[in-house]
Image 1 (cartoon, rainbow over the protein chains, first blue to last red):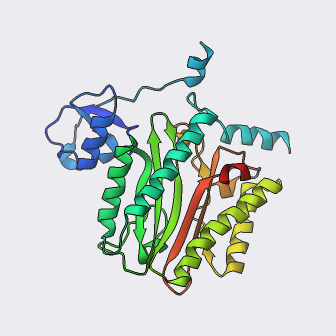
Image 2: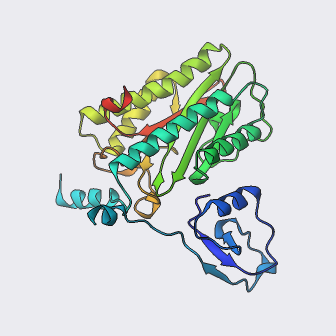
Image 3: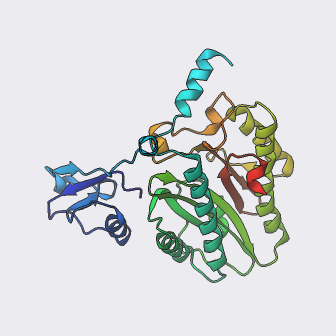
Length: 68
Length: 231
C-alpha cells in the first residue's frame, strides 16, 4: 500500500481498516480521522451511494526548493 | 538514434519534482539494508506469512511504512511464483531451503526496489541457484554498461544466458522504471519493451530464474548502475 489513494469517508457501512491499512493511515502526514485508502475498500451492493472525498498526499517539489 | 526514439526515451525516462540522484541512491541503500536485515532474521521453522509480517515491521521501524508494491518473502516452492501471485499458504522454511525477498518501499517522496535470494542449510543446488541469479544480473548489467543495447535486447540476451546456465528466466519480471514516487505515472511497463538503452539510476534490472525440475527459483533485483556502485 502506497497511500496515494487516500480519501475521506464518513460512512459507518465500511468495515474497520485492516491493521496494515490502519498503520499506514497513522503514518501519513496531514490526515484526518475519516481517512481510508480507496484501494482497500471492497465494493459491493451494500455500499451503493457511498460518498468519498479525495484527500491526496502533499507533493514536494525538491527542484523548486533547491532553486530558492 | 532517431528523433522519434529520442522523444520516446525522454518521455519514458521523465522524473517528478522530487527526483534527485542523491535521494535515489540513498533510497537504494535503505532498501538493500532492510533486505539483508530481513534475511538475517529469517530462520528455518518460520512460516512464510510470519516472515512477511516481520519484514513489514522491520520496514516500518525504518520509517518505510509505504510501499509502491507489496512485500514479498517467499519460501521454498513459492520462489517459483511470479510477481503479484499469491503464495501457497502456510509454507514453512526447512533446514535446507531457499527463500527470496522482494520489497518496493517508499520513503518520503522516493521509491526503492530490490530483491535478493538466500539459502539456509547446505543444499549445493539451491546455493548455485541463488548465486546464478545474482551472477546473471551482473552479466546483463555488464552488457548494458559496455554496449548500446536496448532494454528489449538486454532481456533477449538474459533469456539466452539463463538458458545456457540451465535456468528458465521469468519474463513477467523484466525490469521497470524507478523514480520519485510514483514512477507508474510516467511509465509502468517493462524495461524489456523499450527500444533504447536505459539510462542509469532510472531503471531496475530484475532476474527471476526458475529450476525446471527441482521446484524452486531465485530472484535478484537492483538499480541499473555501473560497476562503481557495486564495489
